[in-house]
Image 1 (cartoon, rainbow, N blue to C red):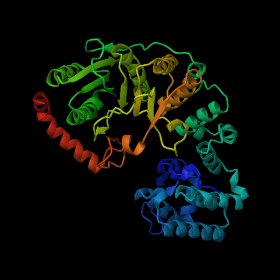
Image 2 (cartoon, helix red, strand yellow):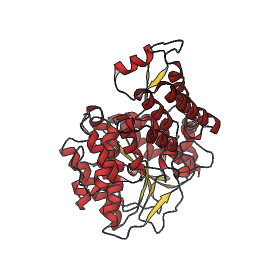
Image 3 (cartoon, rainbow, N blue to C red):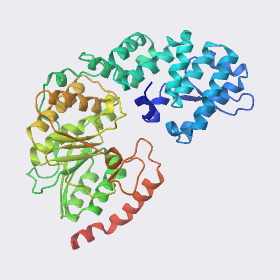
Length: 455
């Protein structure tokens, strides 16, 4: 069997359906994390009361993979030890529940080929829903959408999965790739059929005028918390490394203090073309997914008014290198790993859109999608990236689309290497090198506007 994409994917995808929970003390194992595979308190208690110390040891080793950020890069000796231990435990107990734990542990530790061999040797557990959901995930990564849909349809009756965000994301993407037109939990009808719309609900805080620069305008979107904690630092890191260019702030629900700060920045940094828009998004269960999606309607609006290209980045990213004009001849650009599933093929956090008919069509689809799910009060995590990939496919069927695939290590660097252009963070912001650089930028920002006036 050739190496599968899931083996090189982010550890999250090997954890998500084998995620640990805290357990009571048992036989000297203090508050061990044990695998949640059975979704059943009675099953957990059965294991603990049996004093299956070797099973708990196996699970603790699997935790070491993630707790130490080893994941799929664990030493071969450690992987071999996990495999040997899982086989010994399976032979010792000859119990389906224990076999499920062993199988899930193999998968979690990136022993995917061994996981498949193991469940083939244990046909009695292959149809268990804990194993089936893992198989569906693997099939999606391998773009075997028909087999994925078949499994997901069977699991739809289980409430735990029906209400699980990733299960819904997987179902939407697999159904779409099999020719379906999903309407729930998000309605993708219009963007699949190529129905676009003009951006709506966006107000300008700075004059609406054509851009006078020849560089892509850097774009960030943020709510008040992200503006003060992140977007400002993104701007300062950009200003530190560039002597000219454009920067656009899109602001969700801004207050007067934020508007004053924008006006202050415009006055202080006259070497840059700074602009801003705002949008009111009501509080509700889908406000955070709306933040990630609605920025593309704002990008659509800014391109139409400024008549210039846009380079959009996450507000919590930091510039570590000067933006380069590498986009000539391309209509748009996206980041995405070769090991990514469908919904991460085009990452929403780093995108380039040119000032051209093709980008306008693409972004009109994104605007329509945003308006549709707002009207229907829908929302889901990854909705922006699902839409980005579908819009790419719809636009490609109408135009000869030229897309630049950006190097993820350079433009979406979560390891914070010295040579990369853009440093990114995930939901975990406690990254030492990132935070040290951010503090440096905070100190530099106090005199940065004075330095720019001299250049």
